[in-house]
Length: 153
Image (cartoon, rainbow, N blue to C red; front, top):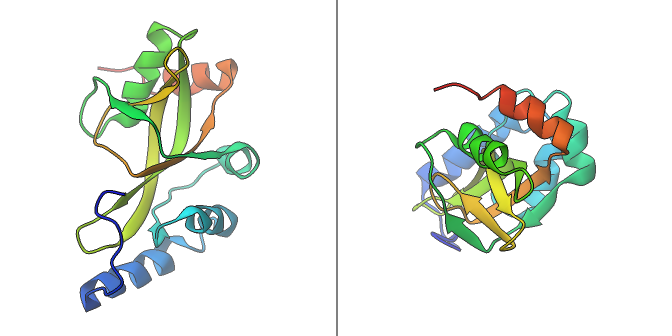
């Protein structure tokens, strides 16, 4: 894992973990628990709506393989949607969370979307490399609704 956790963390890293867990852990406790069981120390979440049930019942963990794809920085939902829209038979739209370890050894899950190349059997990462992915492959109808939310320039 990139920037994997260290056995000794700085007081600032421990304080950050505690703050993240207190801030986000109670919002969706079942999702939070599922994410932390897969790795990491905390998860950043926003209201999940219908996605909470989908995540709890359909999410899959993957560490790759992943290749770098085209996309705008910090615009993963739109980027992944564009891959799917351009070739839905080849690119599945996957949304959920991605884990990264920071230099202080804190592993944090953040909302993230990516495309899955069914031809090559690999994740298409359109922003920055991630250490672990945990997401739901959207059905064609779900993907259409999701992508329509991000159809903008």
